[in-house]
Amino acid sequence: MSRKEANKDISRGASAGVAEGTARGRAVAAALEELYPGSVCTLDWHEPWQLLVMARLSAQCTDARVNEVCRDLFVRYPTARSVAEADIAELEEAVRPCGLFRMKAASIKAACGMLIRDYGGKLPDSMEELLRLPGVGRKIANLILGDVYGIPGIVADTHCIRICGRLGFYPETLKDPEKVERILSDEIPAGYQTDTCHRLVDFGRDVCSAKNPGCDRCPAALREICEHLKAGNAGEKQKSRKETAE
Ligand code: SF4
Image (tube, rainbow, N blue to C red; front, side, top):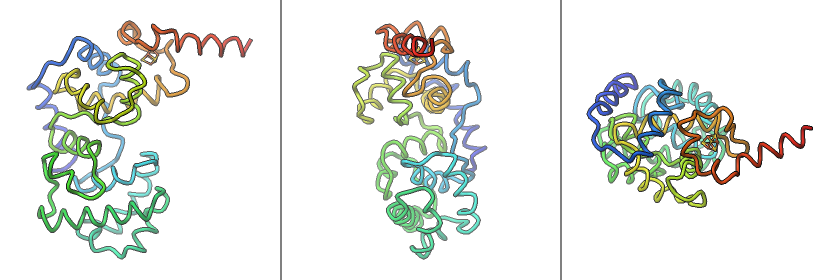
């Protein structure tokens, strides 16, 4: 299944609306949809096995760098089998710009090997099987389930964890991805979970950044429910920035 076909399936899943979520979850999903109607995964994959490789390479690396590295990588290694059979030293060199290159090269080679050996080259469509693949944790598995198969899931990355804590889904001090995933799975309507996570990445980069959230540019629907803003955190920071500038 190509990325285009997968996106069509996701739209069908969204309209089916498996679970309704909570009022807060629906409000956040709707506000983000209005702000970023066309958000998609920022990793530029074309075949599902490529998403697996790119997601693994993106640990502690920007998606932009991964996209750049993978443009050449997928010319040199055009199939999962070619990654599985790659010379490890050459593969390490090819992914070096993504950092942690020895570990990443070893795990993408091993994961592609298992994909060929155990799954006939096709990415499995269950959490249990995806977690068997070397280097795949729940975050990558949920990304694959959502983007490739249209199966709802929360991708608890750094933007998602930070912003949803600020929005009051759980205390801001909670940073455990699995707990965040469990909470948000009940809060965000199922048909919106995948897209909402992509939108949180865009929103985290554009507006609700880690150090200086741009609350003055935040949609009213989110400002109304934002616990971080209510607690005066963002206001205090903005005030102190203004005072410093004066
Ligand atoms: S009001 Fe500020 S802290 Fe709250 S979600 Fe918006 S940008 Fe983030």
